[in-house]
Image (cartoon, rainbow, N blue to C red; front, side, top):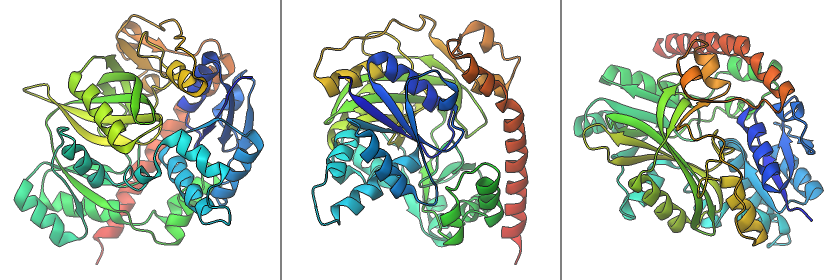
Length: 411
């Protein structure tokens, strides 16, 4: 019997559908927990989709797990990981302290002692430094006095990052104290009620509702700016060991702080060593991403962030040691790794539809491997319709940034 994997996502993130396809090809029976109208519904995969309800997240997770009875869960975004951790704590407080759900979450994500660490940007980098991994100076900023003290000690430019954010939404690179103070107020502030309502009513995305209603403020971190080139890794871990890995240099991004759209496959000893040390220290299992800066003059890798979930490259099968779904299947079943054929020998990977949305005339669309899922035409058509939605979203984000600035600047 095929092992079952449950992909859990709280958003309509397109790469989740790509990962489901790769896991199916690796031998898994794939089921999903996802919001209504997720791109997974546009594929021909033999899967069952359980509905994720944003106002009842833990109930959604528990119901999907009890129905699917998976051998493994893969979170598709940061919020899904957080809610799995919350479900773990809820189950531990139940009458049966060691529940099957707890055992499943530990099997899928790793040692529970790692759960509170993976979200805290400063804590994870402090831990990495203890393991001998090269990291930039990082600290938690609680108030304006902390920010000014950090600026005096570390200087500009600096990077401000809010915990529990992804896709560049909670990152600002600032060059003056005035910019830093403004960015700090924006990043720390609860989500605008108008933004949460729009997401809930139009996009049926309820992730911002509770933080907005409860006026939840984010933890903001300051990080030393490392000039250089961005890089990223995704690894398959099992009980603290790295089984397969993908390492990339970022060539193009959606915007200055957004996700990558074009990547170049690389081998980097520093990045590989950092992944092994972090996985071993935290006893991680499943798919985990790491972000780096490659120092401009030396090329040395500085770890800047851990993503405790899969990223948008999880479906890529690029040869021995670079097939993450195959490595995960082997770990779950105890069988030897049966890697899929290499998707391409071109070391430039153009992510679809991200780069096409960013620039339909991008030269990378012709020179690189354009990762279009041609075997799923309905999924492709659905993605092609997202370009106009992306433009509308970008216009909305610009308006919100302007509105936030005006609101925060008022006495």
